Image (cartoon, rainbow, N blue to C red; front, side, top):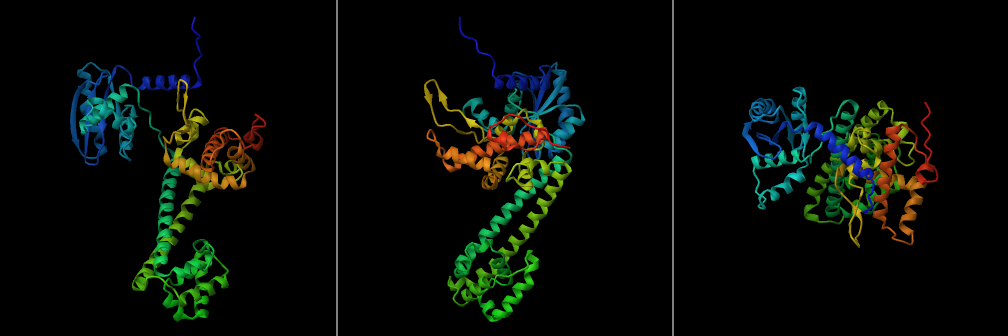
Length: 443
C-alpha cells in the first residue's frame, strides 16, 4: 500500500486561498475583464470556459467603469449568469477607480499579475500577439482559473504611510542623483577640491563651502578671511554650527590650482552650483517626509516597538511598513518574506540539487527597504552580527557577504512581522534561537 503523506502547511494555505477566491469568482457569475489604458478601456464579458459573450471598447479613463458594468450586466444575464465579477491588471493607479466604483455597486474586483497576462499571450496561439481585446480575454481566463488575487485596500494611517513612503523613495533618488551629478561635474571642472577631505561629500564644512561658491576663481577673489566668514554665515542653513578651518584652508589652496578642463570650468562649476542646490533641496524634503512617517508610526503606536530591534531605526521600519501596509493582512511571517521576494527558490528534481537562490518575485521596494535596514542593524545588533559571522565562516556551504545580508534581511522581516502583529518587544534570546518564549509588551 503506498505511503500517504499528510498535507503540508503550504498545501493547506493554498487550499484556503483557492476557497476564498472561489467564493468571489463564483461559477454562476460571468467575468468582466478590462484591459486598462489612459484614454480607452477594452472590456470583455466571458464565461468560465473563457468563451467571449461580448466585447466593447469604451472611450475615457478608468472612471468609465460604471458604463462598463451597466453594459456588462445585461450581457451576462442574457447568457444565464446571476451576476458578474470584475477582473483587471493592476496597471499603475488605474485599477483603483475600478475598485472604488465596483465595491460601491456591490461587485467584487480581483486582479491578475501582469506577468501571467504576458505569458498567456503565447499560450493562446504561440505568436505572442498583443491587442487590447486579446489581453482582456486572457485576464478573464486567468480569473476563471483562480490565478488572481483580491487587491489590498489602503485606508487611514496605513494609506498615508504608503504615500509618504513613495514620496521618500522619490526624494532618495533625487538626492542621490544630484549628489552624483555634483561629483561628476567637479571631477571634470575642479578635481582638486575633491581631495580636500577624506569624504568630501559627507563633510558638512565642505558642502557649506561649495554652497558659498563652486567657482575656484570667485573663492580666490574673495580671499581666505572673507571666504571663511561666508562659510560661517551659511552654516545655519545647513544645520551646522562649527567650521573645520583645516578643510577650508585646503579648499582655498585647491582654488589656486584647480586643475580640470579649463575650457569648461566656468560653465561646469555654474552647473555644479545648481546640482548642489538640488541636493540640498532634496535632503530637506527627505527630512520632512521622514518626520511625517515617524509621526504616522507614533499614531499607530509602533515607534517604540519597532526600535526594540537593536539597530533598526524608526525610519527604516517605516520604510518597510510603507511598502506593505498592515502586515496583519498576511497569513504569517514567511508570507511577508515571500511578498518581498526574499524567500528561497528551490532548484531540485529527483536526484538533482541545484543552487538555491531567492525568488526576487514580489515588491522590489520592500526588498530594497529591508536590504537598506539590515546594513544599519548589522553594525549595531550583536545577534545579527553573530549570525552573519556564522553564515560566512561555517565549514559547510559558507555564504558570500551579499548572500548572508540577504538571509539576514529576510530574518529581519520575519521578526518585525511578529513585533508589529503581536505587539511584543523584540527579544534577542528568541532571535538568537536560544528560547521560544515571547513575552508581551508591557502596557
